[in-house]
Figure 1 (spheres, rainbow, N blue to C red):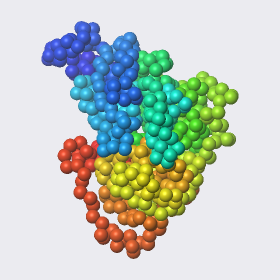
Figure 2: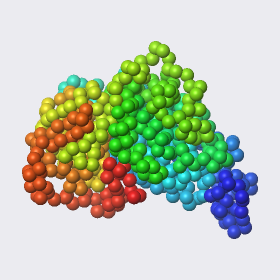
Figure 3: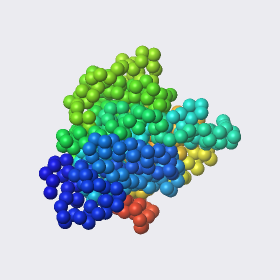
Length: 557
């Protein structure tokens, strides 16, 4: 058997007379005699034509494979799944979205573990692709590079998928006609790529680059540009260098690297889903990380990027001025990043950023450190008698930092959306959507449809929304999610009644239900857990094993 350290996993599969049958199978796929002595590089593709986020990734996978082959490896392309949050949002199908993160991780681990790949490239587009791919790579711990499929370009009139969701709410308010809504529907999504703001896909792509698992610049490229093809080819070649150096994900994904990711996510004004996914990824690689780390880092890191959903600009406009590399250099020079972290280039983060040019002087997308969009983090970790184990709020400051209102309680996303659209929700309400957590949903759906309805109805600065579900990266307004313990587990959210006063303070990082403990104890004694919504299948399995959102909602504890 080969002593080549680069072939640690493939040699036992294909070397020697006893593996003649294995080689026979691979010859049918195109292997030659020479190929059997090369390191094998698996290319995990999330291609599917069911969503624009992933419809082009088959071509990107072929480029990554060519890069690996050209650098002396032997590539093998395989697929994993994707689902589309943008299509499924507001439906029962959205319960499968977070579950798909686990399925992606499981499938990459399964294929690579079975087939004996020595290294990997994983290419993701839609929201759960990124953390799912990364969790698979982390479990395997073989030299690997992640590639982001790239962002979509803006639709007509600077629109995107969130524009469509909010147009529906605007129609309900009477501000748009059906013809106007249909025109936005027809023109907001012009082609391939992930949703165009600093929503979850672009947030996680940026976080992964900050961790060091993508090549510099990978997170800020348009899906249809030649730069993305070159990125894929370079990623395939980079795996061979990583194999030579024996540089693995565990060498790169350190605690300091996760702190870098959190810092970049905050500076970009990124999605609350980054909290959930970074906790899960840290768990997978065995790095201690908690909700309180987001608070600690957030106290010293400002929001600098004026990006959607709360800001004005789209990812393609950030791409045009240099992406996130100049921002990371600013953060590094300010002492806010750990420059000595290793990356998939084989160099440190500081070495990667050394020659990066600053943003153009006339750009207005990324603010200077002394003129931030917000002086500290928009990601607030709240505690209180309504969330003893924590909740995650996205407060940019534009919606205020304090809200007191009366509870309007709904037991599902559908019921809440109907209530908002029918006028049941009025100024001063705190919309409570419960039994939408990881176990209760099951699947912890995103509340993009109700938050978009609130914005479309013109109530964005007049109501708050809290849930044990989560939010799309496109959600904005005074929103609090990931409330733990979740209602299905008997958390305090299950005890809230219509008319209760709720106070949310994003300065004090608190969320308080203004009901005395005697009354809460009475309600607790009367409460009964709802029967599980699914008895068989993947959602039933997920509900039985998934952890709390405050622990990343992982399934391999």
